[in-house]
Length: 341
Image (cartoon, rainbow, N blue to C red; front, side, top):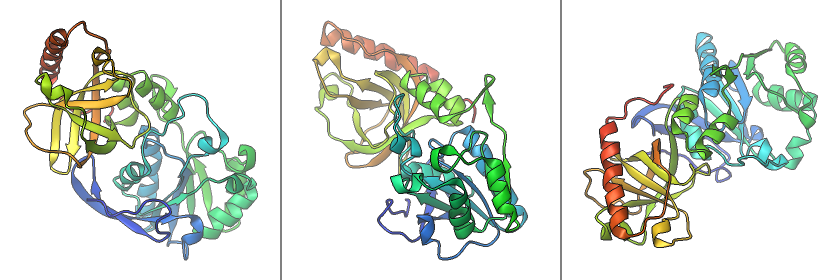
């Protein structure tokens, strides 16, 4: 299991040792809450700066290069990130949902081999730092980096006034360098968190996986539902999600991951219109599984959208459709690796 505190619980370091994607351990990553809580700069810092929501393939390329260069000089690979993201403080109108929880983002970053994650609370005071103050007091003052690598669309400082030349000029005074890496493209367009959000909201899980390099997943606890599934022969595990970005209503092929393994199944995300429900629920019927998962922390990996959610005239008609859905998803198994992985 992870050994990690929530943001704000402890300003000192915590360590991750569990890779939720593969069920294997990886070298521990130190987490520091706020740049001011770095007692001294780590040795030989090679770092990147950004929000990294979703840790998609574009993020992965930047972070992988940070890790590669840090290893080459026996230095420290550092990710300096923000939570909540700047757009949440500044306001956003289209798909204002985080792709990953903080804990999931940290785990994905740790799995890439990063040594230190410094997570910063993006407050109104922080957003008012001018570009030079940000570089001099935060980047140089706390990290003293030898190299800063950033993504293609990186800007910083009040009103995003800071650019790469500004950072490079300030870093050069202390012997550091700054470099902007090119975008990772998919279908001739840059991979971005906005594209991921749009794909997931539209239920295009294959497109989301191509952008993420993994299936999009929902983290949460298995809770008790109303038990309707059991009455029609399809008992379900009900997920109460912490993840904000949830696919639109529909029926999906899924993989449910718990501490004991991964179970394939089919899930309904929506309002159960046949039963005139009004609350959005996430219910997964797990194949060839018998057991009690109530209270378990789990991740529901969304593999493929099978069909839209719709109302049936009778319980029998719903049961017949679920039989067909299950047969269709079983025919897809094994699901194989996500596209783009």
